Length: 395
Image (cartoon, rainbow, N blue to C red):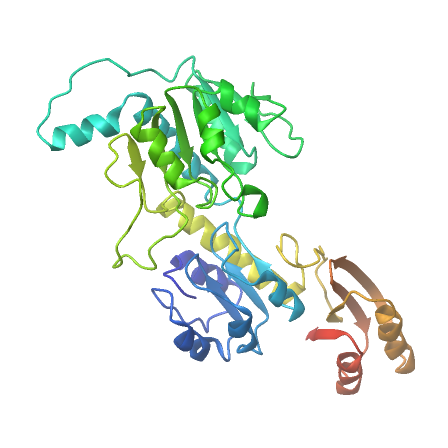
């Protein structure tokens, strides 16, 4: 466990018998990381540890990876899948914390608190209602109507706001939120815009100079999603020119590797911009919930083989196994593998009582419950099947 993962994770693992846990308070340099995980069966990380293909190759015993956060960009997911290693994350546990930060920043921006606080620190006294507004009656535009976007919408409605949203997928609205057909329509209509999209090629600079220009004069922008989503230079220009009334940014294209490193950004020094150091999910409640959620997924996969919610792996939901051996076989998704597996059982008079198969991309994952004594020969033959990535037995 790296990067100071909450003690709730260690406690959750201990409850089901996993007690040999080594903890590190920070991310490790690659050379040290390779030393530490060489014999590890599980690795738990947050956002700073980089699990590249080279690092994964140096951990031959690795069974699964837990990202104790939402994002998984710090892991080479393709390489992990090719090695038969599922990756789990926590897509739900910090939802409330991020949503509350967004709402708090939105209220501060509408009241022009950031710039007036900055002025007060300089000895200026700006007691005025000019440019200050209530949330009630304003339109909030949510870009990306997932778990966090929905929560933001619900909280905003409780403040009397009108909520519209845009998502590339059809989503059932919560409360009185209304979908709009295009991002452009949302940008033109919303007074406050909050971004909640993943990091991928489609969202790279999703909000650039052209998009900012289409936002209504005086509008506010909040980004607590991913650092690549907003063109920071274009945003800085729009704030200095007062085309935008304010912004709150929690994530950045380049972030310091540690709290000891300097933070550099074109947004520094702009009074009407709130800058926070990627703390959307940084509450004690969220970290405790994340610790339990991801630890339980790791233990459940280890003990049971279930891969539901794995981000890079076929998802298989499995019943508990009792009085039977369970074989987990990860393989290339090519024709003939299942025939070869069943032939091994047939040749060795092994009766199959249950079989569960799913594929995802280039990876196949089959779980087989068998009514037979443990056999090293059967396991060796299954492992020797061409295309096998990994084979494991649960006793």
